[in-house]
Image 1 (cartoon, rainbow, N blue to C red):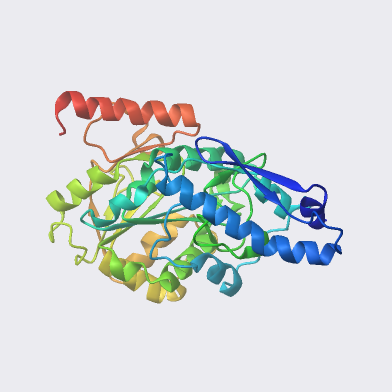
Image 2 (cartoon, rainbow, N blue to C red):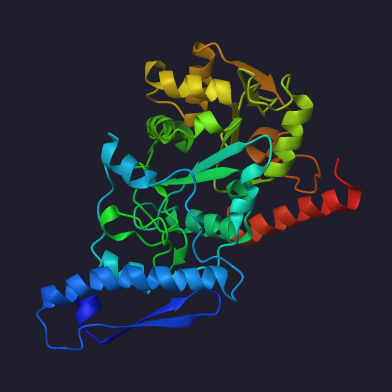
Length: 373
C-alpha cells in the first residue's frame, strides 16, 4: 500500500540533483495512527522536495532539477481528464513508491530558448515503458535529448505527449515515473501531457494506423492555446535527430513570409513521394490553427497513418504544401542515411541513444568544419 512508503521507516531518503545529496525527512517518530502519519507526510514531502529543488536550482549545483513552469500551465491533468481517448491500464506496482524512489535528473536550463525567432512549438508522442514494447527505447531517446537540451527541448516551448502523466525530470527502474494521482506540482514536476491511449493498430506492412491518436493530440494542442503564441508548430518522432536552429534558418530563407508563420503552408520533405513524412512535420501558425479548429471534419481518419492523414486533412482545408528538399534525410524516403550533412535539418531513423548521438555529432561536426551551409 502507499502507506508503507511513509510508515516503514522514520527516515525517507531521496537522491537529489547532480550532487546526489540525500534529502531526509523525519516523520511519524511518535506513535500516531497511520492516517495521521499520511496526512503529515502529504504536506511535509512536497514542501521539502520543493525547498530542496529551490536550493539545487539556485545554489551551487548550477543546473535545475526541475524547470520553471512554462506557459503550458497545468495542462497535463486537463488533457487526461477531458479527452475522449481511453486511458492505458494502470500498473500493478506502487506508483507513489516508484515516483519517490526515482532520482531527479540534471535537466539543463532550457527556458533560455524562449525568445528565439521564429518561435517554434515542438512536440512528440512518446510510448511509455509500462504500456508499449517501444516504451524503453523511446523513453531513453527522449531522456537523452532532454539531458542535452536538444531536439524539441531546443524549441521555444515543447510538449512530450504520453498515455499517462509522467515526471520527465525523474528517472528510475521504470524509466520516467508516473506522477501519483495525476496531479503534477508545477514547481517540482516537469510533466508530460497525458492524452490517453497512444497505441496504434497495425496495417499493411505493419504501418501504424495512428491517425486517431494524433487527432487526440491535436485536440490537446488546441486546448493548450500554444498555437496562437508561436510562429510554427513542429511535430517530430522520438528517433529523429534534428536541429531547431537550422529549421529557423531554413524558414527565414525559404518561406515567402521569411518565417513569421503567416504563410498558410506545411513543408513537404520527401521528393520521392511528393509529400510530408512523419519524422518531422513543420506547419505554419496559420495552417496549424486551421487544422486544430477543423480536424474533426477531415476525412480519411480510419485505416491511415498519421502523416497521410494530416496531409490529406490540410489539403482538404485548402492549406498548401511547399517542398523543402533539404529538410529531411529519411532512410525510408531517400534509401540512404547520411548524417554528415551540415545543412539538413533532420535525420531519421536513429533508434538508440548511441546511434542518435553519433548522427547528431557527425552533423554538428560537419557544420563546424564547413562554417554552416
